[in-house]
Length: 336
Ligand SMILES: *Cc1c(COP(=O)(O)O)cnc(C)c1O
Image (cartoon, rainbow, N blue to C red; front, side):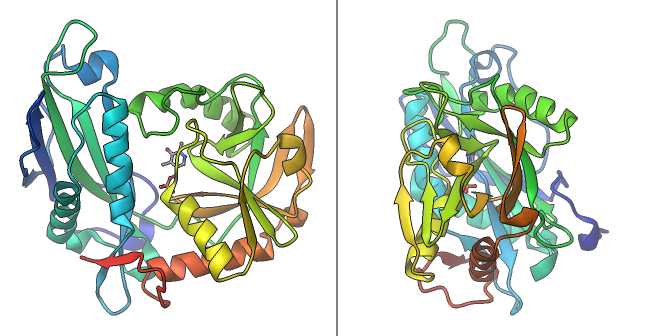
C-alpha cells in the first residue's frame, strides 16, 4: 500500500474491505461479513434508488500516540441509526451488530488509519432498502454496509474561521419531517443551497427554521453554537435538527470542564448576530469557528474574525480526548 498520509484531505480513498449484512422485510438482521471493497449490484427497482429509503452514519477511528485505535462514542451512532431506521420504515440494526461491524472493518483496515495528527479513518455505515419494489412501500430486503476511508485533518494549517451566508431561499428540514435523522434524502437538496453560497465565497449556509424563518437550525450539515459571556447556547433538538454526537459532547464538556452555563433553546438569527463567539460542530471538522456571517446583505464579524478563545479551548479539549491525548473522564473513548 502506497498511501501518503500527509497528503490526505476529506475525500474518498478506498480501503481493503467493507462489511455487509442483509435483512428481509419482517425478518431479523443476521450478522454479516467482511468482503473486499467493491461495487454493489442492485435492481433498477431497488427501493433506495427510486424512493430514497436509506440513511447513513459517520464516525472516526483515531490512532493514539501509544498505538491504540480509538473510537469516539460509537454507541451514540448506533442509537441514532436505529432511530433513523424506524423513521424510514427499515428494520433497526441491533447495537451489537452495528458495533461489531465497525470494530471488524476498522481492525481489518487498521493500516489505513493515519498517525495521530495526520487525520483519522472515517467510518461510513449505511442502511438502505436494497430490494426491488414498484409501489411506494418498504423494500422487501435491506442492506447494512460499513465502509471506511482515511481522511486528513479538516483544517490543515490549524483552526481557521469560516464565512457563512444565512440563506433566504432554502430550508433544510420541516417540523415533523426527517431533519432529525440522517436520511439520505435530506442531503441532495442542500447541495444547491451550499453551491450558491460557495459561488459567492462562503463556506456554507446557515439555515433558519421552516415555520417562522427566524430561528437558527443548522450550518449545512453541522450543529450551531453561540457564546454570550459564560453562556453557551445551541438550538434545542426539536425534531428538525440532527442530534450530533459532537454537539452532545461539546455541551457536556462546556458545562463540566469549563463551568459554562449551557442552554438548549431557540436562538433567533438576530440574537446570534450579537454573540461573542460562534462555531459549528460535526464529526468531520469537530469544531469550526465562525468568523463572519452575512445576513440580509450585511456582513457581521465575530471575535474580530479570529478564532475565539472559548472556541479554541473547546476544540483542543475535545480533540485531545478523541486522540487519546487527555484523560477521558466521560468514558467516551472506546478501544478497538
Ligand atoms: C451528521 C450531521 C451533523 C453532525 O453530527 P455529528 O454526530 O456530530 O457528526 C449535524 N447536522 C447534520 C444535518 C448532520 O447530518
